[in-house]
Length: 283
Length: 309
Image: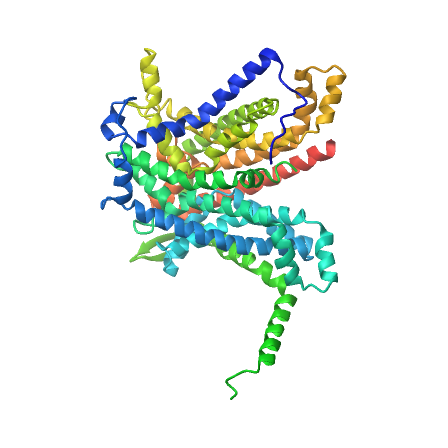
């Protein structure tokens, strides 16, 4: 998705300078806080407390947060990675199959409308409304305070997004390609596996990146369904902020670590992410 | 000898399995999603209905239910914090979303007219959407810090009095709204920017040739064409602002007093700090009913708009 430099409504002269200035300001406002917290994460607590702008950078906070015996953060990172990866794989399988089924087979309007309508409602409802019953059910099933509980809930949370996104991508595949394959003796399963799925690969990447990031970031469910052993990164970051005596430097380091997967995935697949985030809104 | 299956037999068995998978593809491709949604969303809502008329308590780690209709309704009506939470949430949603829409649309129109740097702006704008909201909360908590936060540093450098951003009842809600605006302007921008880029360039060129000024083109051509995207962004932001929880939990936890208590935060406290599962269920159902009603109204409004056009 390269942007053409042409625009039918270009700025002229002074207008252009003002526009550019506003733009630089907007970018600075968005990026500024990230830079600021990154700076804090390399300061010693004393330099943070005095608000020093000139300081000797130190990696001590990262070492403390990740490797100190008093910190569970390395375990939290592992938990988050397991939950995010497992739930992403599962939601891609379940969501893609459902999207293909709805797209390809003639489900009655009532069934597909009920399913899609309900996914939309669920996507809009605050998760905290369902966390209560989830908590009770998982306790009774013995799944409370296990990573399984988080994997299952995160798959459910990301299912609406995955189904809607994959349906949009399947819809873009010309019908004739699959028809031709079926006429040539291709089985329905092969048509899905060999033709539709590879053609919808950009959708899989977009949905996969978004599902991973949303699972990694998810806080309210992780907060309520886990305790110390199973806590994920967001829960740990919140704990740093809520301790009686806030360890600002460690909180900053933990926050920076928590943003790394998003930064990495964005660097790798920005165009897929943009497509995923804006799809549907534009049409 | 029978333990070694004939190769042809195995192939036939495999072909039979594939056949069966093929014939039932339509069903088993759809079933997992339906089952998952049923077990994790429909069933819990049925449970919410049950809980809302019960008193649920945990005894030795097991839930004990007793039928107590009316008790939870009473708890809801007698809850002094709920009113404050509803008012705060209304202010939060209306002010934050209005600012996000205005700034987001303005920025999208501005960036679309630039001849360079579009990609850079978009990259920067995606950042806040993708990082954990909790990290955003702790980031701003540091920046708002009374003693060493960057805002008070700037104020003192300018000779002004420092502000107690999160600890003062009159400022805290504004501070929280500001974080939400910072967090979500990029989302409105991304949607609107994609829509602006989708406006046919020849329409704009034709208007320019006919002598329209750039202000006229923006108001009379681009904005009307953006209406559907603006509607979508507004709907999403309205509902998701209502869901705001993570950052506020970190920034203020609802305080000081009840000055930043939002409905979502209050629901969390009712469930997990006060352990009132029955009342929490009642509140949850009220919220879900409200969202469904809102979606139905929004859909009718959407179709009405589409048909009058």
